[in-house]
Image 1: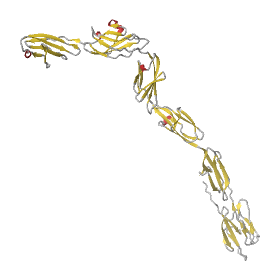
Image 2: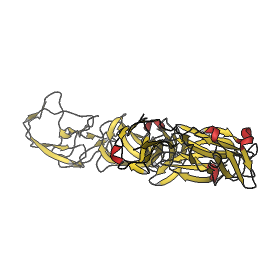
Image 3: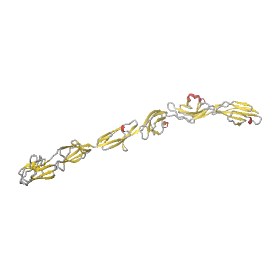
Image 4: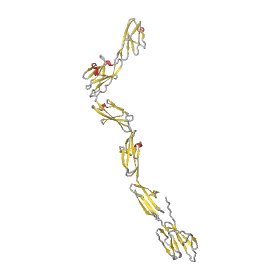
Length: 491
């Protein structure tokens, strides 16, 4: 920056010579006075030179040379661009040199009207100026430049110049900050600085881990769209919210049972043909209770969890309304093992399950007996002797109806026949071959003889009197009919 300074110029009234001027001595006494003024025209001091002294004086372009000036006269001088003493008082009639201060009138140029206005006024002292910058609406003053270089950040200032100067007032459009707060900064764009009235285009994108949930200003939802256009009139902070993704790892339907796997889900809502059907926290649901007619259905499951987005899965299937399930399932053992259950008029057949093996009744019609409300089916040939067997029945629906739910289960045991034990008799000693998992019971004339796991017993202690004794050995086993062997001992 250029240094500005005040130049002190001396105005002297003196007799002029070349070089070092000598004031001549005569019989006439006089004074030569020099008045010194600063650049602002204020009297700075006075110097008096007595005749006979010598002084080296420097002339200036503002000098006037006069002669034959009457002693004691008062003179004033004018010259454009100079400041002189208001008056010069002469002391003798001699040649007189009057020096004035050359005024510098600088050329001042003010630029920067775009975005505001500027004013240039004269200052309080010569060569001083006051410059003021006023921003227009929606603009702000930023700085003054002097000859292209930074000078001041004050919009108004006063300066005294000693040279031409070019001032530039700089204005800028008011700028606002638009910021976006989010957990996924790489998925949003549009934050930055905007001038007042500009339109900000804010965008968001779903990620592999999360889906966009909306633009918020505080708790106010502005938009659910990925793109948001806003006219900016102030600083703005927006919240771009995302929800973590929920996923279905599996989703299928078997019969009327809808099954899925969604590990992070807290709740599943099920919709049938876009109508809400039920809500569950389980991993499967039987839809037979909510499907009332046969037809084609679109089943949609929507998963929810706190802090997550929603996940959807959809499947289409053909539903047949099932026939009623048989009930009153039972068994009787007269003349064999017979299964009995309710007759279902809408059923086209019956599926009898024996320990998981399906027996279609229509393929064994000779074993069936029908009445108005009951079906009897001989099942001996499908049972294993001595085994506890689970049995249930499903009514078949045919082409137009689905099979019924399974009936309640019953358990049936087909008892086996045991061979009578072989008894050896030697005097009063009875013995037999003992079989694993078989139980034995011995009586003499109906009185039980205690056995302690042995298979040989001397009955002499139990034969107190002479006579004929009936000895019976009975064998039994689980799910088998017991068998007995009788021998006689005579004492």
